[in-house]
Length: 309
Ligand SMILES: NC(=O)c1ccc[n+]([C@@H]2O[C@H](COP(=O)([O-])OP(=O)(O)OC[C@H]3O[C@@H](n4cnc5c(N)ncnc54)[C@H](OP(=O)(O)O)[C@@H]3O)[C@@H](O)[C@H]2O)c1
Ligand SMILES: *[C@@H]1O[C@H](CO)[C@@H](O)[C@H](O)[C@H]1NC(C)=O
Ligand SMILES: *[C@@H]1O[C@H](CO)[C@@H](O)[C@H](O)[C@H]1NC(C)=O
Image 1: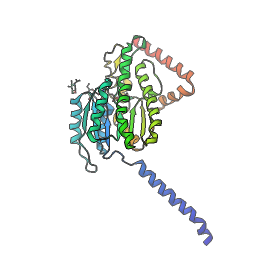
Image 2: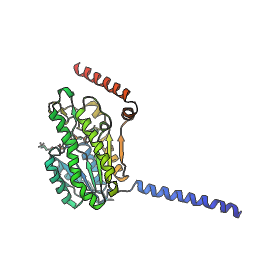
Image 3: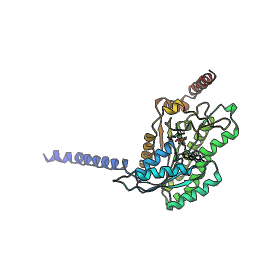
Image 4: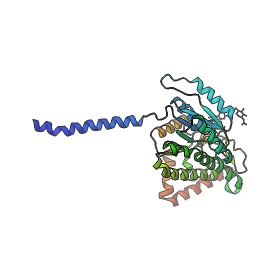
């Protein structure tokens, strides 16, 4: 009998150990790192940024909302003020208005952001602009403008906030990229290029700041139901102004905002939020490029035919 009990001891201990580990992991999984944290969201006036503002506000973040239009940001602050949460303490957001495409003003905006609370815990680089056009008809100035807003703006803002994060050995930087940061689709050159650059920059950053205990997350969603395509620019710099079917049929921005919150709470390094087809395409680009190029060329021909009809 004694022998049997003696033999079961390690088993029971092991079982209890596993249970404790499971409990701790669950705790970590659902840890709300956002409560009372200072969270900066760019492009908070619309679409995904606006939903992130709602979700992070409800989770108890001390928000700093950024955009170009102060009126729209204030409207959001008013709206958030009306939502009450009995379980979690919520804060009235600050707003900082600036144009990301004007790199000179971004450093000053970074200082203004740091002044709000003296530090930043989470910087969410969400603002962005899309593009639709044929490379042959696209002014180089448009290629540059999209790059300024989607790439150099976030780079300048990140580098304005980074030194204080390094000094504190604490901080999390999030980049909202796109599946088009992982593979390039025809007639989206400026956008895909800006998102590929984003992916590369934040991958380098992640490796470089790990030793300071900083987190870097790149989120790559497929289509989201926002005004992104309406607000997109075309080859001559004019507004595209069309709600694309693909965008209209995209993911609910609320759902994507929760994925952003989860990525922050769980310190995920990378999140690909795409359906099976785009996911396969991302892997094809690496594993079978010849097939990927064929598929993209055929897609380009098909889109051109549709335009000519
Ligand atoms: N929708 C999609 O299908 C999709 C898919 C993958 C990734 N994304 C990415 O998700 C992010 C959010 O886009 P969204 O879909 O929410 O589009 P959206 O509704 O058009 O929102 C874009 C936001 O960016 C801000 N913004 C644009 N240009 C700016 C500039 N020069 N300076 C400062 N702020 C600027 C806008 O603010 P103001 O106009 O008020 O200044 C607005 O709040 C973007 O990075 C986008 O690339 C979107
Ligand atoms: C999209 O733009 C329209 C007006 O152009 C606005 O009424 C609507 O609230 C916007 N949607 C989002 C999700 O920002
Ligand atoms: C800012 O947003 C408000 C409210 O949506 C709008 O009426 C106004 O025209 C916008 N201003 C600019 C400069 O775009």
